[in-house]
Image 1: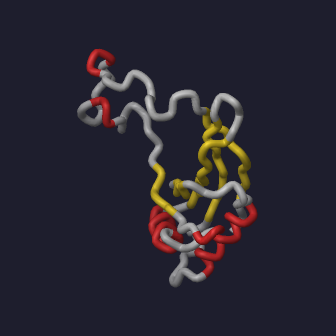
Image 2: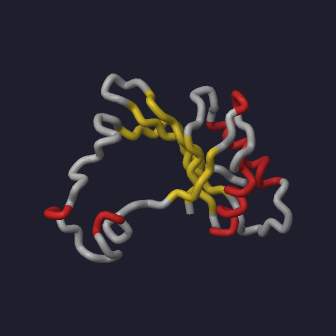
Length: 136
């Protein structure tokens, strides 16, 4: 299970992010011993010139219950520069759950495809900035 933290500032390091996430977990009541954070990853959208346009973080957690509680705990809390965390559940997209297929599980029909390329993010590449495995 993944959690995405959107629009993080460039000054936020992986160590500071780990500290914030672990602090949010520390104060959760009735925490199970199975609930833990497995990994943190900061990813950037980079343009053709190599300039970072947007940064976000992915947090991999062990259980769905932990994911829901961490989203509730972090969402809206102030981050660096007094900007609030924008946290949501992250869903991996593939052909089985792509909304453009019409109904779930049907084969992709290129004739009906109105989005042949991603217009909003043209020319941007995803680059993993830093990744860390957490032993919480």
